[in-house]
Length: 461
Image (tube, rainbow, N blue to C red):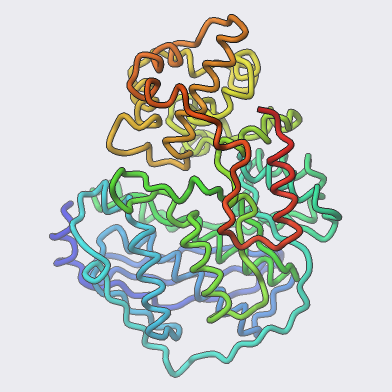
C-alpha cells in the first residue's frame, strides 16, 4: 500500500491507555492502541514482581513512556498523521522530544518505503491528559549497575570491562525476553540467575497480519524501547547506572550523504537526549550511558578476540533468532558476514571456522559478495544492520590481509577479491588510528572511563 493513500484513509492513531494487573508471578502491563477505522492493538509486557510499587508515580511514568515507544511499532502500519495520547501529560518540549525520536528512529523505515516527508509533516501529537500531570521525585537509594545483555560481542566486552572496575556483586543484567546466548554470557561473566532481570515483551500479532496484507512495515527504534525498559528495571531494583554497549561507530549514517541511520537509537545523540529526558521528566536518579562509546567496533573486536571463553556462546545474528530459528548464526546475512570481517584481523581462519562452522570470507556467492561490497562502501548504503563504520571495516580487511600474507597463508576468496577493489587501493597504506582511539565525548563516570581505556590499550593488535 502507498503511504499517501494510507494517511488519507487512516488519519488518526490513539494511545488510549494501559492496564497494570498483578498476576501470580508477575505484573502484566497491557497497552491499548488504535488506528481509527482499521483495528485496535493490545501488546503487553510481563515484569518480575521485585521492586514494583504500582502507586509509585515514577514507575507509572515509566509505564506510560514505555507505551510511547511501543506505539510506533503499530503506528507505522498506516502512519496516521495525528497521534492522540489520552492517558498521560506531555509538555510541548516532551512532544518535540518524542517527534525527534520517532522521525530519526524511523529514518530507515521512511527510506526503504520511499516515504517523502519531514519532521514537521509526518506526525502531529496531541496529549489530552494535561490535568493528570504527576509530581515526581526520586525516593529510592540507588547503587550498582543494570547491564543490558543481548548475547553479542559488545555486551560481553562491557561485562568484561566492568569486571576490571571492581566488585560487580551489586550489578545485575537486563534481558528483554530470554535468549540462550545472552543468558550463557551472563553466567560466564559470573552473574547468578537471580541477578538477571528478565521482563517479557509480547507483540500484538495483529500487526503481523497487517504486514501480510500489504500495510507498511520496517525498522523501528528498538534500542529506545530497551532504554526505557532497562532504566525502569534499574529503578525498580535500586541500580544507579544503566550501562549500554553502543560504540562510536553507531553514529555513522547508514546511507551516505544522509542522516538515515539504522542505529539512531544507539547513537550518542540519542544517548544524550535520553539521559536529559530522564533528568527532566522522570527524575528517578538513574544514569544512562554507553560504556563502549569511546571505542570503535574494531577495538571492541580486538578485545573480544582475547575472550576465548565466550567464543562458542555469543550470537549477533538477528535472522538466526527469527521465525522458527532460535539463537543461531544464519550464515547468510550481512550481520554474520560483518562479524567475521571485523574479527578476521585478530582470529585465524581456523578459529573463525571453529566459531561459525564455515569461514564466510571463503563464500563466493553473489549474495555474500554484495553484502561485502556494501560493508566496504562500494554502494550507496551500508546494510541496514548494526555494523561498523566504512573506514574501520576497510582497515580491518587490510590488516587481515597483511597478517595472513606475513604468515604466507592463502587468502580467503573475499580477501582476494578485496585486493582488486578501489577500496583496497585507498586503504592499504592507512596507518592504524584505532589502536589508541578514544572518543572523549561520552557520559561515562570517571573510574569506569579509565577501565575502558585500559582494556582497549591492553588488547593485542
